[in-house]
Image 1 (cartoon, rainbow, N blue to C red):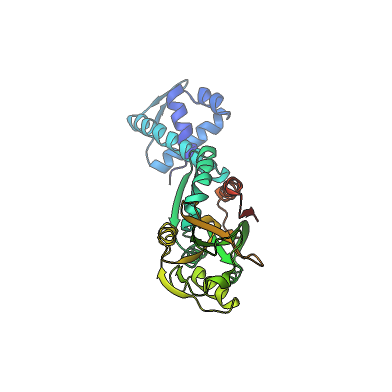
Image 2 (cartoon, one colour):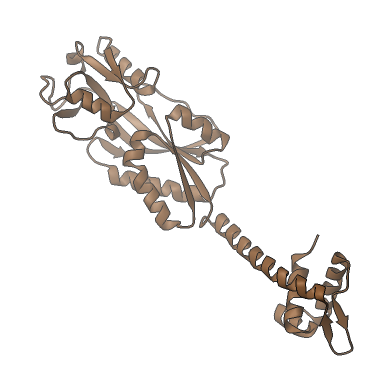
Length: 305
């Protein structure tokens, strides 16, 4: 295998025309340069210079190797710079997972900051529910994921993960604006006879809604299911049902009210999770960007964890 140090020495000898001049450029002694050239000749299996008493003459093989070697050394220098950038967090790739409401409200701010601070880094996004994202984080196909957990649907975390709290979202009851239960705080028990709109069966949101209603003495009559809060909002506005939504999923809309429930407030909590052993230097910057993005969405019903 060719030694790149010896190759660099050969390139300098050809460029300067002497061992002594190459030694001065490289900071070696003339003897060291001569030894490196001899070692390189043994590696390639042919003499590369005609040595005379006071001069040397490169062979055609030496000229060819020096020309191509200079290109290779330039590529190697560039590669070393890329590695340094990767280790220092200036380059590389970070793979983020997120759930839909965070995708709409939080992630754009975070990606914009991260792209501005690390313009040479590659940022990849994937979207899914926590049960989809957590296995990808554990498997290493995602570096970092935004996930959530409801008060009434607690979640346990694998010990391999570092879990960073980001946001607390109040759970709101969404009703048509003209609904008789539309007050500053809504009594959940007043909605026992309503049709309910929930997320897909088996999701944490749907489980939370059922447990919430059970705590108020009734089983909700679930007539529609969707994980698209825009559709849920449209159905509520059309007067076909009521819904429980986290604050990130509520957008003020004419004809729709999103109110906190009367009594003890309930929350959905947003976390950033990553493998503790993940050494990606961009993780720190991604977490900082997500924290800054959360600061921008804090407001009524949304607080920093």
